Image (cartoon, rainbow, N blue to C red; front, side, top):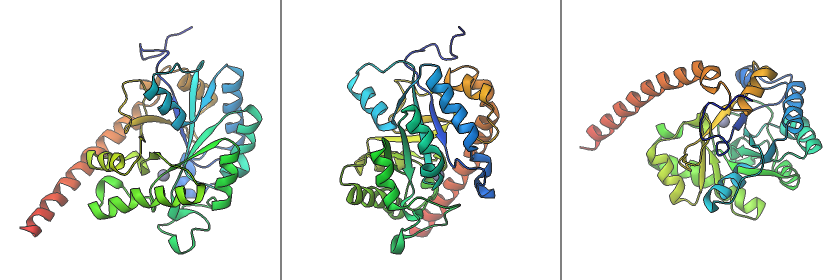
Length: 277
Ligand SMILES: [Zn+2]
């Protein structure tokens, strides 16, 4: 068998990032959606090839405690909280006994009511469905309140975007919520430090790399699964093969865009300090 790209094989874990599982995803998120048929094929592949599913929080807890990981661990995560998670993905996960983690943008929930914020890209989950998911073994994590680029907003807004979903979810679910994923995968040192200060224990980014024991608990990389991901490429990804090649274009794009965003951010900081002085 081919060795994974990373020589710390056995300790590295593919953490997959999904969004919508639907044949009719909204245009703005279509590229990041996966068809229900493809999703079923992917989960069946994992089940038939001896993979063990973990939630994101469980993986982080095992890492902290140093306990051994199960055979061929894999983590499935879903961002934003699309309604099709219950309708399409959950029956597949349940039939194969796979857990998952969903990162919820609380202001986007279908029945967010007075706390509604931002613009949900598609039909979203309801508060009641979060309880259903949790009972079925899906971990609920936070994904900000209104889905801004957390590294680009003023500190007061940042605090609210991190604290509000945590307290809303905790009030409703009745237990601590300590995992989050940054919208678009964007974080900065300030974002990560404030997440820790507010009681989160782990943060998931995107980065399209493999998570290793040395990964910063607030910069855990995930691998995007998208509409254009064929099953053979999915298999390479979860077997940790050809990650660098398969994800090279997105990596380059992300890196390039990061430079633009950093300089914008620096400009804004300069402007702010000029205004203050
Ligand atoms: Zn998102």
